[in-house]
Image (cartoon, rainbow, N blue to C red; front, side, top):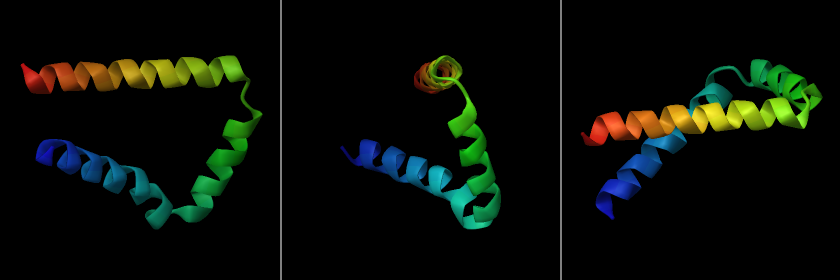
Length: 61
């Protein structure tokens, strides 16, 4: 459980960093994301999940 909480905390830090560093740029990115079709967002999400799975696999082996 300790390991999970550490990982979760690190994810929150990485996820929050862009909002802290460049909030105006994030607003522009969000507007552009809203214009993308669902299929593109779904593909991007899938590829990011695969990359994350690959990193977890490399980290655990």
